Amino acid sequence: MAAANVSRAGLDHVVGLRVGKALDALPRLVGEGAGPFDLVFIDADKPSSPACSAWTLELTRPGSIVVGDNVVRDGAVTEQAARRPDMRLTGDLLAGALDDLATILDQRFLHMGGTTTEVFAAYAADHDRKATQP
Ligand SMILES: C[S@@+](CC[C@H](N)C(=O)[O-])C[C@H]1O[C@@H](n2cnc3c(N)ncnc32)[C@H](O)[C@@H]1O
Image 1 (cartoon, rainbow, N blue to C red):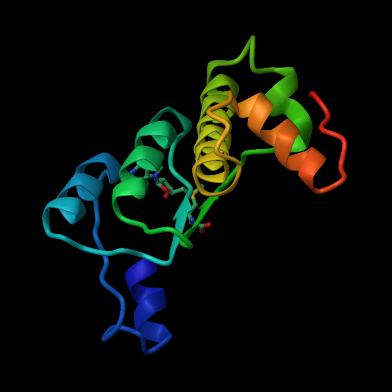
Image 2 (cartoon, rainbow, N blue to C red):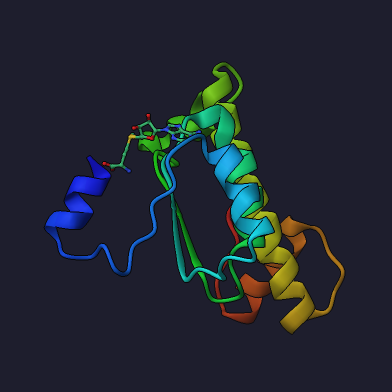
């Protein structure tokens, strides 16, 4: 279906398709030296999402945008994380992304060596905002 849509759009000359499991294709792309990509959309099965996200970091650069599908689910990710493994995986993925963001904010701007919570609280205070806990 993707190949047909790409052809119909007249984009065969700019789009490269990889058919197969993402966790096979992503390490292969890294091995080939592909990227860095400006935009990545992760819409895979939930158990694979954290590993897809980790490989994505190898294929992007600062400023790249990574979009994950089904990460909010009307709040179910936080409410049901303890009970449902797929929600827990998505929650872990988001937590990892927030940890990465806190590390970047701390290294580039705050230089405090704090935890993720401390870094976001300091950043919020710097911007006259109150940090809230979920
Ligand atoms: C929810 S669909 C969305 C497809 C497309 N992004 C869209 O919005 O139309 C997800 C697709 O990815 C495939 N898929 C799920 N997990 C995958 C994985 N780990 N590797 C490769 N394909 C996967 C599924 O078979 C399905 O075709």
